[in-house]
Image (tube, rainbow, N blue to C red):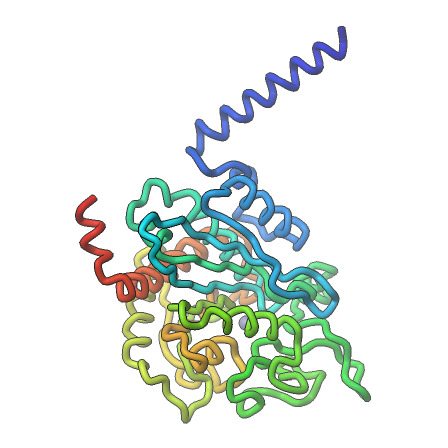
Length: 354
Ligand SMILES: [Zn+2]
């Protein structure tokens, strides 16, 4: 009798729960609705969230492990895209977060970005159409070892680098993964001192995390329209190149598309984002993933430096996660829409028909 009652109550619970899922949040959202996007999450919760999002949205989301960290953890991405009936070749958008361990707002943004697309694509014709033409590859955390290290205790919270072992004669761990890419490697804005925060490693791609991104993205470079890599802080939109004497061939277009994104971002919460190359508005650097992406031929490549401008910097309070992500989403969507419409120039006509 007791068992029966418990089974009945469990059934009722499941019924109520499934009703809530479809009633309050619409279709296609299974398993994303419980997650709190206004909190920072440790890595095990982010891995679990990725599994839930994939399981709950099989028509839109799939996942892939495309590399392993120095300590052997999976580097996993979510691919967001819809099939198109015409058999058009799909183009690719790359979005990554969490290459610098302490910049917690970046992984929070990647999760927000995925949630926002999952939540809205069925009711947003333009977004649905873009997802039929594009596959968006999102890596919530590249530097998994470093991210986990920042969660260990207060003394490790501001760790930036990876967690690779010290070179001979040194006791300092880790490489600045955003100085380790094969783009003017080692030339400016780096250190060869393994104890420095901008230590660039022993050679381009010496670190498995940077090499994983380079190997994976290089295989689809011809289809890739845009490379967005998300950092904090400073409220900047950085474009290639980090070397002060090298200029991108489409520099003017990179600036205008970046400025249009900054205008969209300002509309959301009034925050100002500055657009320019790293030497113009931050500092010269080399070996960044942004520069590497442009060098291998991806036409649009940007670094977003999210909130804030220094008050909290990498310790951005959780109350700011939502507004920071809302404005960054508007900026990212502005760039993605531009590159989509440029590649699929019948895009606007198709929208008007509907
Ligand atoms: Zn960074």
